[in-house]
Image (cartoon, rainbow, N blue to C red; front, side, top):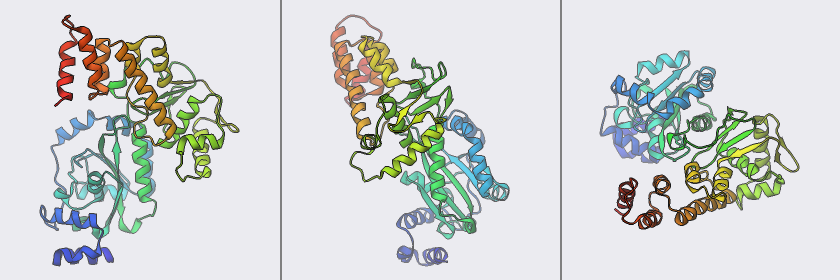
Length: 400
């Protein structure tokens, strides 16, 4: 096997293996060699109580619980072991099929196991974490010989509201069960966890009750969460973008118009868009018409709520409902334009009416927008106000 030959060459002659292996694998091998022996027998274990405490307080725990049935089914159907880690590549949760569960336990591929490459050698979990991108490690591409009979696929998991990397999800099995869709499966599971992430406390006070009325409810500002008749929908990023655009255009959109709003001048076929709409229609129980594409149920969004509050002069309430940028990271030109419009509308309203509590709240979302804070402090002057120390603190932090 090429992987075995490359590994043997590296162990015996170091960088002579450079032409035989992927650059990221060679870099990780060098890092591993400096830290551990190739005959390491198991991953080191972190403190059990500390690991359990971290897991219980992590939003990942809630998200995994929500999609646990799907994760377990994936593990059982493919005789895989599925693992979720923290940002330090410490395993927090695992579930394994019958065979892989025993193999995993034998090398401490269990909660508390430290799977960074300096603890246990090159592996997909570490690569996905370091590169912030999906990664695969096959057989003897692993530095430690104890997992040479494994193949692992991993993908990073991010907080959909902030973009913060929370850890990775990994699926592993024996090398003879390798499959070309392994990496794609890891990506899908990462997205599944991201869409199941709980609403963070930062947005928990929004005056938008997803279960209050029948129909579609979408939170798009600083996060991406959708409910239909009170039930959470697990949608991928593109489906959320399409649904958001349809929500903003209740009159409906033609295929060509929707394509332009979603993709702009990207070289993406209309067939790709049709496939995404088809998945959406199924998720919505058929409540999405064609020619034009139009939603057939009541729709409520936090974007509409914020703009409505601003129109009514309720600036503080609008800032409370404003969770941050609309769908952070979207590459839809129409949604980027809408995001800028909403952000500017909130900012201008605060400049015109800088209510101290609202400015404090806004400064949490836009910590480097010092002008709004400065205008508020100038308006307050020497008048005593409990928000003044907070505002001055925000200003000092932003100007460091």
